[in-house]
Amino acid sequence: MKSNKFMTVAAFALCLIGATLFLSPVLRAENSSDVNMQLQKLNYILRAVRDNYVEEPDAAKLLEGAIEGMLKELDPHSVYIPAEEQAKITEQFRGDFEGIGIQFTIQKDWLTVISPIPGTPADRLGIRAGDRITHIDGVSAYGISNEEVFGKLRGEKGTSVGVTIMRPGLEVPLDFSIVRDKIPIHSVAASFVLPDKETGYVRISQFTSTTTDEVVSALDSLKRNGMKRLMLDLRGNPGGYLDQAWRVADLFMPRKDMLLVYTKGRTTRSDSEFRSTGIGAKYDMPVVCLINHGSASASEIVSGAIQDHDRGIIAGQVSFGKGLVQTPYPMPDGSVVRITTARYYTPAGRLIQRPYDKGFAEYVMEGRDEEDPNAEDALEADTVKKEEFQTDAGRIVYGGGGITPDSTIVPRKTNSLTAKMFAQRLYFEYATDYVIKHPELGKDFEEFSTHFEVTEPMLGEYRKICESREIEIDEKLWEQDISFTKTQIRGEIAGLLFNNRDLYTLIRLQDDDQVQAALGLFEQARALTSASPRAQIRDKQ
Image 1 (cartoon, rainbow, N blue to C red):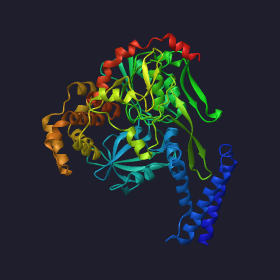
Image 2 (image 1 turned 90 degrees about the vertical axis):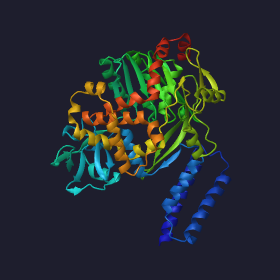
Image 3 (image 1 turned 135 degrees about the vertical axis):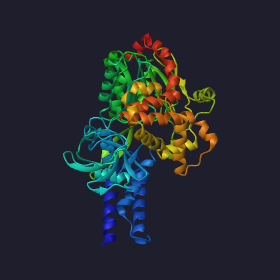
Image 4 (image 1 turned 180 degrees about the vertical axis):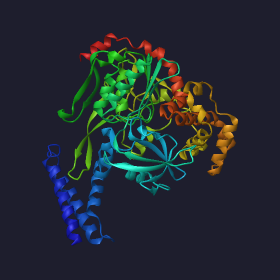
C-alpha cells in the first residue's frame, strides 16, 4: 500500500513537471528527447528508491528536494519556499501580525522584554523594557524557547492572554490580561534628529508593503523637528518589494519623469520602467546614504538611483550585488516557487548583479568579503575590473558587483571578546541591573545624554557579570573595544530608562565610525543637488 502511495505521488509530480515543461512556451522549442531522457531518469531513480532504499522513503520530501535542486541550477535567487516558511515571509512583508506587541530576548532562561512596540496592547498597558515575563496563562515561562513564545503570545486579534511580570525594582509581581491586536512590523527601524539639530537620521531595515508610508511619516516628522539634511541608513538591509524600492527612491527625486529603475527579461512582459512623480521636491535637501555588504536588492535600487542622479553621496562599503528580479508562482498547497524573470538596471544602465558561476556558497561569501585594510587600494583594484558609467553630472560610477560607494568608509571591527558579550546580551543584562538601582536617571534625557558617562567602577561591575558567565577576559581585547563597550552600556541604560529604543540607537551612533565619518560628507552632497543638463537629456530617452 505504501509503495502504491509512493508511486502515486511520484507519478503525479512527474506528470505535473512534464506538463509544465512541454506545455510552457519557454521550453517547447528545446530538444524534447533530452528532456524526456531526464524525466525517465528521475522516474527510474524514484522507483529504485521505492524498491531498494533501506527505509520507507517519503515521496513528497524527495520531490521537494528535486524541485530545490532544479532551481539551484538556475541562479542563487530562484528558490522553492515550503508552505510554512512562505506563511512567515508573507506575514513579515505584509507589515503586521497579531499578538501583544513586544520585542523580547531569552535572558538567563527568562523571557525578557527588550522593548514594547509603540502603540500596541503591551505598550498601552505600560509594559516596559526590562520586564521579565514569569508566567503565561498561569504556566511558568522559565526555560521557554523563542518558538514557544511565538506560539503562546501570538494569536487572533481580540483574544486575550494573561501574563505575570516581575519588574526591576518591584517585589510584587504584576498581572496583566492583554487583548491581542494587529501589531505593525516596522521597516523604519529608527528615525530621529541627531544632536546637531539639523541632521535627520532614518534607518530602513527592509522593504515591506508599508515602507514608503513609514518613510514619508518619518521624513515629515523630522522636517517638523528641524531637519535640514538627511542621513539614510540602508546598511544590512536585504531588500524586499521592488515597488517599494522605486517609491522610496521617488521621495528623493526633485522632478517628475526621472528614470528610477528599469527591468529587462527574456520576454517583453518582464520589461518595465519606473519613473519619478515629483513628490521628492518636498524633500529636496542634501542626502548621504549609507550602504554596506549586507545592503542588497531594493537597497541597491534606492542607492543606485540616488547615485546616478547625483541626488546624494553614497558612503560605506560596496553593496551585496543582487540585480535579479523574482516572480512568485504560488502552489495549491501554499508553497511558492520564486523564479528569476528579469534583471534590473539603475538609471545609468548599470546591472549590479555579481557573478554566481562559482556556486551558491562562494556567491554568498564573496558578497560579504571585507575590504583590504588599505581601503583606497582595495577600492582602486576593485573598480579596475568594473564597467564604467556616468551619472547625470558626468561622474564615473561602476556596474557589476554591487553599488560602489562615492566615499568608502570601512567600519571598525569589534573583536572576539565583544562578540561573545553581544551573543549573551550582557550589555542589556548589566543595564537592567543598573537601572533598578538608579531609577532617578530617567527623569530627563537631555540631562542624561549630556552628562551621563560609564565610569570605571561601572566597568568593574560589568566585568564581574562577564566573568560569572564564564567569559574569559583577555586584557588586550578588553582594552581594544573599551570605547565600544562604554557606548553599548550607555545606550542600553538609556533605552531602559526612557523605554525608547530610538534613544538606544541614537547613543550607539556616537561610536559608529561610518556614521561619524559620513557627517563630514554633507557639503559634497549639497554640491550635487542642482540638476545637470545631462539629467534632462537622459530623462527623455
